[in-house]
Length: 390
Image (cartoon, rainbow, N blue to C red; front, side, top):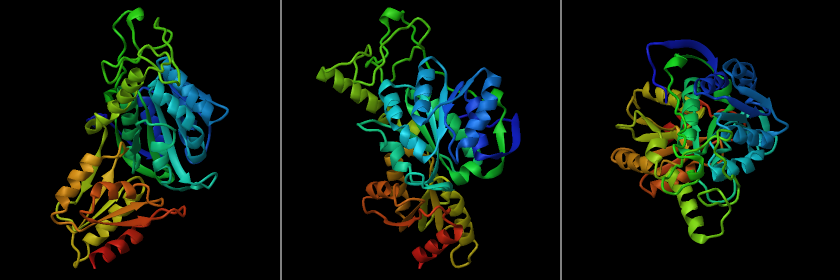
């Protein structure tokens, strides 16, 4: 992630604007997409800004074409990105699975809205959390990030590109309609100070190159058109990229595909704690709900019979791989003084079940689930806090 420096830009931005700016600063050179509310501003901005930096923008015929165009551009050496929302994200799943098995870096920004189907096109939701992890068939790992304000839209987008290139994998950034369309004053770094992760290239002659070598968890990726010809397929393949039915080769490939993510969760997973040192009640949230939770905690802190130390927050910046180890340690630590974790999310409990699994009965798990197209209000969170403390 880029570090803040003295050379900064003070801007008033919408979340989607910050995301588009970050893509440029991260070195994105290709965008393939199809307009869909509430993500369209990302495409609109990049259609103007990408050509200015030598990049390419293309509006495809649909979302499956969009993700496939990004995969092709990435294999040719261009950092690639698409943006979409619920129905479009559903259409992309086959392409996302193809990017997983071919180990092709690509960033997918999904600005969540109410569903299923056309659902609530202009209303916020967090209903795509499990789909982002399990939407494409078969055993595979996914990296899925979340952002809860405009500044985080910027930094999370850069991080999505960096993780995608580093681990040769598609990365999903989940925003939501509130975060994407809200406007805030932000301080962003000078783009010259941003140091994006650049993919590693082979140092061996083309005849020696193995695009899916099992010696390392993450093989280097050669760009098509630069003298390295290799086979790419959605079938399970050997180290050269050709389909295989040899069980030992299948096992090695699938284990490496899994382990390159699961063995690096310390680098991938980010969980933030706020005011949890002495808290009796801890609220776990992500995305736009964080804004309401923080306001509710401030309100509770001003009450004489509650005080500033009784309520804290766990904020998930990485949703997948789910931060089991990090959350397990946090629960161990806070169980000395906390009695309840409240999971607040705008769906029917998609992260709640993960928290319950990791908790293993140590603390009481309560919930705020809301999927009616409205942001969970600070007052709703505050009332739940009062009920938990009573």
